[in-house]
Amino acid sequence: MRILVTGGAGYIGSHCCVELLSEGYQLVVVDSLVNSKPEALRRIRRITGRDLEFYRGDVGDRELLERVFSENRIDAVIHFAGLKAVGESVQVPLKYYRNNVCGTVALCEAMERHQIKRMVFSSSATVYGEPERCPISEDFPLEAKSPYGRTKLMIEQILGDLASSNRDFSLVILRYFNPIGAHESGLMGEDPNGIPNNLMPYITQVASGRLETLNVFGGDYDTPDGTPIRDYIHVVDLVKGHLKALDKATSSAGTFVYNLGTGRGYSVLEVIRAFEAATGVRIPYRIVDRRPGDVPVCYADPSKALRELGWRAERTLEDMCRDSWRWQTMNPMGYDDQD
Ligand code: NAD
Ligand code: WQD
Image (tube, rainbow, N blue to C red; front, side, top):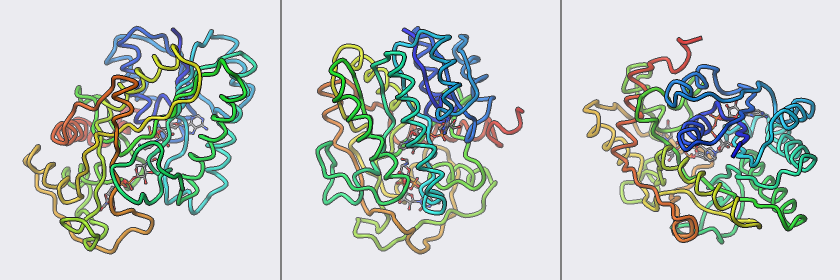
């Protein structure tokens, strides 16, 4: 099978490419490199010893997509490409609507022209807004609280309408919780631009001395230690869920939605302690004001994915910390020093 992976040079997409190539799939990657580096593609080849087709460009570029679909017989699309910085999406919402929503519409139009009817889409737990309780199951009410989150919600709806309009279409929507960790080789991981927004990349940069102190956003939440709770999932477990989703898209028509999380929540302070225990490196931190938009508690009920896909996360928080740290120590400046 030949898979088009949009956003395949990014953090999750690159790990997914490794998994897919290792399982024998042929790959075509389209990525604009707006938030990634060509070195990530070289690392995919290095880890797997296999090659892939790469087109540098935007999924919103109709001519490019026409070329991609004419030159390659694609069986299914895994659609990772998108901008993902929640704070930035509040500052420049139109950039997010154009890139994420318009880009997806253009991709779907090209798929329709070429009669490609299988898609796996990267959605996010952010579509649950502030959940009334946890664990969160897929039938919870949806409410996005940022322009970024609204792009995910809109895309879910657009893809759902497309799938309903064609009884042969298979759509698998995956709602990720908090992906962290890195490939166990240490050759591939998350390489944020500038100062990281997310917890684990910030912790690893404090651990390596690149940043001084971790700011813990809020110590007065209604949680056991006062800091927010999230469902952190190892990126390799997460991408294995995509292979199961691909099987589903190949065997059944319709729309299917799954949470990809571990079902276990950890507070910010628990993550800091787990990182220190796994690596032996101390993380200096201070508790500061809450970050606007953060919800107190968010963790998945992942039982539907187990029941219907036969998938469950296997790696522990200790594995996630150890692998993130190996990536950071082996690549202190991320992929930057390679280009
Ligand atoms: P990432 O930024 O590392 O990867 C996204 C990739 O898509 C990048 O390589 C970027 O260059 C590319 N891209 C962006 N817009 C594009 C466009 N219009 N055309 C072509 N390429 C484009 O992000 P990631 O963490 O790997 O996330 C992948 C997907 O998963 C995104 O859709 C994101 O919204 C979603 N997601 C991520 C998280 C997370 O915490 N990382 C959580 C939930 C959902
Ligand atoms: C986790 C916890 C922070 C940084 C985001 C997106 C979500 C999804 C996953 C894409 C929170 C705290 C963080 C720091 C801190 N992405 N924190 N100091 O916000 O749960 O989810 O990524 O879809 O949509 O919102 O993840 O890693 O930013 O934060 O105290 O420097 O760590 O307050 O409690 P979040 P995160």
